[in-house]
Each structure stands twice: as C-alpha cells, then as structure tokens.
Amino acid sequence: MAKERKGKKPKKKAKKMKKHAYYEIKGTVLSRKNVACPKCGAGVFMATHKDRQTCGKCGYTEWKKQGS
Image 1: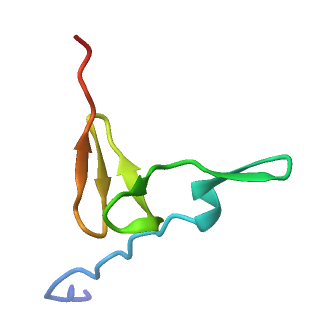
Image 2: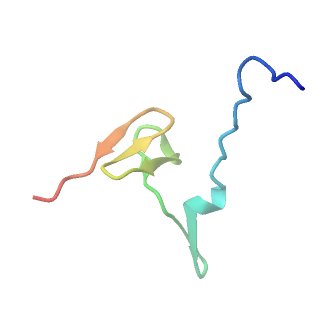
Image 3: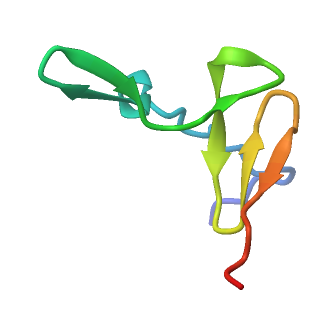
C-alpha cells in the first residue's frame, strides 16, 4: 500500500494566447482584432468581456454601454 504525498498540489501553468490570434490578414493588409489600450499604447491589447474591455497590464477598463 503506497502512501500519498502530503502538501500542495502542483500548480498548472496558464496557456498564453498565440500572437497570431491578435491579428487578421486580408490579402496584403494586416489588421488588429482587439482594441489597443489608450494608456499603455499600441502594443498592448485590451481583453474583451461581456460587459467591458480591460487592459491586463495597467488595469484600465472601458465599460460597454447597455442598450437603452
């Protein structure tokens, strides 16, 4: 009968999003899919959520307007 190890479980590493997923190619034109953060600059994209867009680097948030 083998004893189980005591202590913390090993932590899983989060998968990083591939860089090619941020861009879209149409013919010879390269365009960005996500909105860039106004505070951080053009190289940092904002994550799109159901009710907001958030920058992962500085925490800047833009709330989406609800339908009137």
